[in-house]
Image (tube, rainbow, N blue to C red):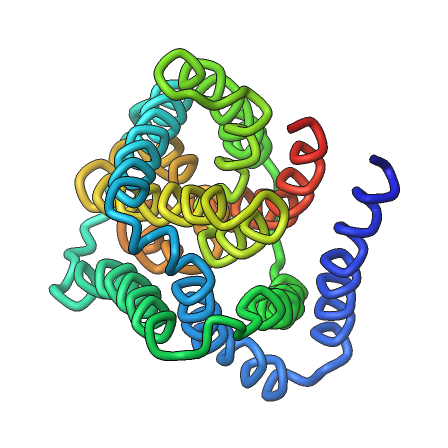
Length: 297
């Protein structure tokens, strides 16, 4: 068991450390170029995921079940996270959001779904013996390397209790949500912990859980985190100004990247720093949580 854990974690840890080291020694121009490839890599990875999980998604009965259950689980995680971090703050920001600022994160989620659909179409076209899992694994390690480069430039000016409170409560919310969901879904507590451990990072959770637990579970995790990001975007737009901490908690790992621009437009500068720190912590923990808790299934 321990050997399997080490074997699974080693390439992830190596990719993350290598990326962080490369980011520290590279100049700003090189770092920016590498980080700029993240979006393109995510698209390729989502296409590969769509291909890899095509057999699941094209099964009408199984597909509907996974979509419903992942929506339910994501809703429970979002609700528990928001309630545990619920606290209203006075925000004096007068920034008015443009249509572009509102639509940009929504468009990114729509593009993500489109990439998965392209992968599903390729599943129907390409030979059945095409090794989609190997391609997904390679793309995932490259993505983690680039995330390491991105993490190397993060600087937190000063730490407050909320910097630690938000990610810690977000993690506690996952455990509570997983426990409550065992009463409504036919899944074990450790299984649900793994399926929610992407903390919104769907381009990681889908392929990594698919590789670890199989295509069905990988599809469930992908949809859970994708739906969680949709919730995060909606809550940022509606409640981010007055309830920044619970919304940042719902954003999870994405608070330092894909949802960060929206956080900047809705929350204070301190909240932005909290979001970056929380997203940083959850981004690092996500792959380790997935691998560690999978050994108990």
